[in-house]
Figure 1 (cartoon, rainbow, N blue to C red):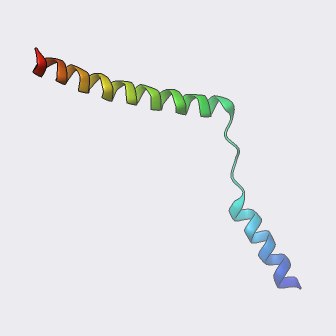
Figure 2 (cartoon, rainbow, N blue to C red; figure 1 turned 90 degrees about the vertical axis):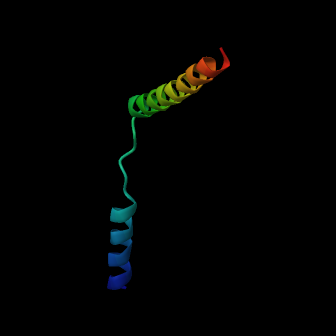
Length: 52
């Protein structure tokens, strides 16, 4: 019985992750959007150079 209790404590320690705040999630989303916008603008600028 002591082993089972010890095992549960280890599982809780491994599974415990700090919850991200709304601000951190929003910042991550904004960064991803900025990267996607940069890639799209680079591709469109390159296509514009070839088409004109």
